Length: 164
Image 1: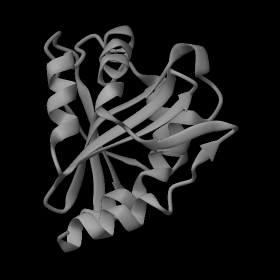
Image 2: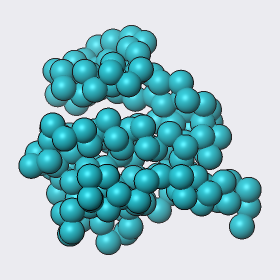
Image 3: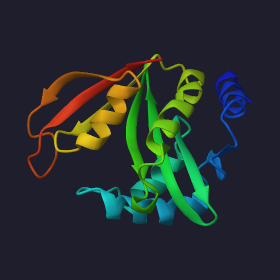
């Protein structure tokens, strides 16, 4: 095992195993259909099952999942790109919102990003997604810029950043 997988395995040990009684851990390939279904439910431009599977198979990609039995209550995924952890998704199942899950997965994933050599999170948030922007601001993320027409439907994105 090389240094990065060892560091990542050690970082997973620092992630809480539960949050409010729900199980917390890395995404498994068997989670891909449920992740893809949640993507379709919450995003205007969701990742397909094939894209989710491809992401889960990448060694520099991490997905932190909160499970309530067989239901995925929330997940956060990112890919290490040099010094940045590029955010793929931060999703809370609609039935589990307003319970602190988005904030939890964002902060719980920080040691995982550090273990992959990242020094900051970097991502895009739709300008219409005020709830996500509020959560990010509360935990120290900053808007760096607004990227016009970033999304396929023409919506602008806020480029957001959080040093680790």
